[in-house]
Length: 456
Ligand SMILES: NC(=O)c1ccc[n+]([C@@H]2O[C@H](COP(=O)([O-])OP(=O)(O)OC[C@H]3O[C@@H](n4cnc5c(N)ncnc54)[C@H](O)[C@@H]3O)[C@@H](O)[C@H]2O)c1
Image (cartoon, rainbow, N blue to C red; front, top):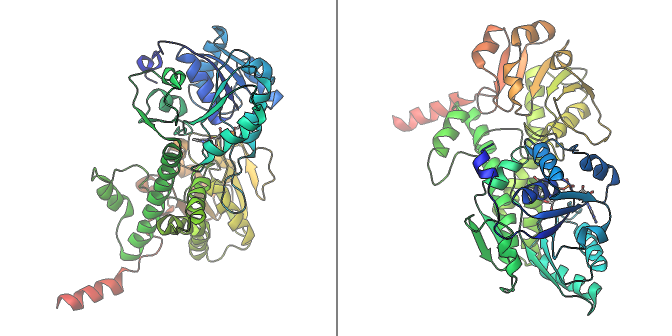
């Protein structure tokens, strides 16, 4: 962490109320306190509040515990379940609660409307409520009507948009090193918002609908990039090209960029699957078929089935096969397993008759039932396994002792879906490496023959 950036300060601190102590709210609360603001974080879960009040962090996020501890100590950060206490001195409330997907792809905004209403009912002064949660365009305007209706004529409520762009596992870094901060404000007189962030940070000020759409469009684009990379990797393995090299070559073009251009088991997490569906639903609501986004979602939805089929082909069936699975969180560096492709793949493998034994260093499955075993060591997971699947890009998976793993496994096949292993080391250990975009299925002969004919 660059401590110089962590020492950034606002010139006129505000008293703030942050609602929700999840990945977004807790990061925002701690980082805003670090900027100099006085922050009350309102969280509905009393267990979380008592943990946090003692400086314990219920999620894994590098650098966050230190910030929470420091700002608890200097009294700029407090946690509570009591909305009256949280809003007593605050004129600005940041809403950071969940917006989970509904069955039709639209997000469920009920947590947001409830959180905002509670603040309005508990406040005796005018409020500016800032929506940091991800919402479709028009939501801030609709929420403002609901909140003003709740407030009647007692107080005035303005709702603004300030979508959050943090990446889990880099959340604190991202807060202090933003590519952009988007503020959607329809009323220029809301000067308090100009005091939220240091004035020299890259701020894009716009209307509320545009701000809301920046977030949706950004996540839709990232999802499209990932699906494109995965489709290209499949093409590479069919024509005998190396996807890693092809994608690196494509990404070296600055107009395209290399991030999110890696083959993998598909996108997951609490944001991309939900937000691309939300984006498509926005189009549907205005009779616009967002075909590129729809295609990217389709590629991703099929991904687990496609990969399971390839594993089945290599292993000669899945029934009664024991598969070791390394990785359960939706990406390396986080404990978050929401919509994790690793878990999606495990479920497909189990459905097809395989026994799956999984290991992950941190994954939090939130007490959900899982149809497979979870063990505490990668070496226990691989015992007597017919195949090994690496599905989350944890750094430690590249550093395992594959000579030892080869001795523990019954079979020899390693399916590295996240390009973490060294092909030479695996070869030396006598293991067969199957990566995405190289070697799952090489069907290049017919293609070469056709090219040759054309060339003659
Ligand atoms: N997680 C990410 O990486 C990320 C990144 C950018 C944007 N977002 C968006 O930010 C929003 C929040 O995401 P998250 O991952 O932090 O969610 P989360 O589920 O981890 O956290 C939400 C928290 O809000 C609390 N809460 C719900 N209703 C409440 C209420 N009325 N009063 C007090 N507390 C309440 C919950 O108990 C929970 O602790 C979502 O819209 C998400 O799409 C998430």
